[in-house]
Length: 274
Ligand code: C2E
Ligand code: CA
Ligand code: CA
Ligand code: CA
Image (cartoon, rainbow, N blue to C red; front, top):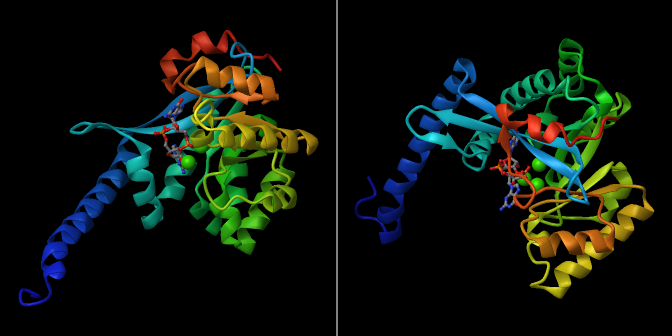
């Protein structure tokens, strides 16, 4: 239609159309995946900073597509967020993870929630219903939210968060340092846990600044009685540094990647019992 238009229109229009179609396909497929059980949950162990004792597991969704194989959430979560399907997906993950993890002794279960989920006024009611249905104890559940939620400044989000906390659910601030971080948020929300973004962890040994920031965040968090988990720990050197500054928990490929339910036993054997 714009054949006579400026060059950039001709160049970009077809690829944009393709992108829109790819998304629509993915959305249709994802809806079907939810209905037909193509989604599954992997669990990544979280360790005490000694790297031995397992303190919890983070639920990470996986899509086992017959044609494409495993699709990473990095690819479909943003699309699910744009279409609003994310809340159904997150509630599916929460329900199934709570059912699967109920008998895992005293370990914590961490579940990711999208900022989009908090646009629903009844989010806390949905979560409560899932805990009731599955019999999962609220005090073993930690929800992971990102700074984007707090930055969005949605009044209904604040209300839902407060309601979840009153139920005894813990709140972790995910990807800390990657976005519009503000220490003010931590104070205002009294989050239980801060998860240091892996971009900092992975710069330990490469950048003195990253190390200094981690040191500083740990001190601050400790002063406020907040637990610190470092994400993306891949080397012994990183682990040693995190131990030296008094970080509480660690998560990363050095210790364990996300594993399917069938491989969880060897980590449960190393878990804290209460
Ligand atoms: P996230 O919450 O920051 O999760 C950590 C991601 O880092 C996971 O990727 C995990 O596999 C990966 N990871 C763990 N250890 C290491 C490491 O040592 N090195 C490196 N390079 N990566 C590591 P995954 O599973 O692909 O998930 C990507 C993102 O998708 C998650 O980031 C989270 O934001 C989102 N996500 C995953 N599951 C869900 C879900 O059920 N609901 C929602 N709303 N988002 C989810
Ligand atoms: Ca997370
Ligand atoms: Ca993270
Ligand atoms: Ca993330």
